[in-house]
Image (tube, rainbow, N blue to C red; front, top):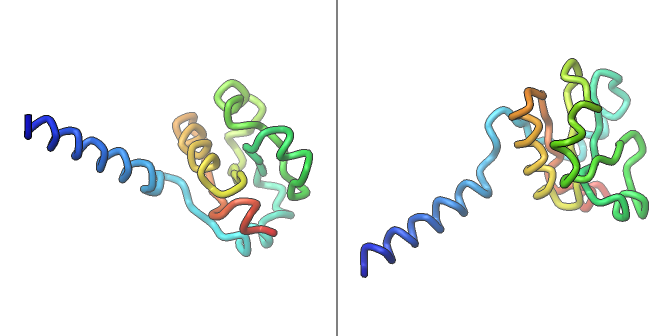
Length: 118
């Protein structure tokens, strides 16, 4: 019975580490970094919050592709341009970054999200 507890504990620790580790191939940037990038025509800016969150407040220049739709809508993005991803706090954009990297995109994730921007 002790072995099962150790295995369960190890799995929980592994899950927590995986959840908060940076994603390989994704650069995390600050909102200050984002301010200097916003006029760059060689980047695509994607907000992965819900459409309701996006319509209540968004950063000009960002397009809305909610996280739950992203994997089906990657064809709307160009692999020739880097993708900058944001959400409310940084958690959903981290998940979105993982989806995009697996699909062959170059990705930057905004740390702290829109909350840090305000």
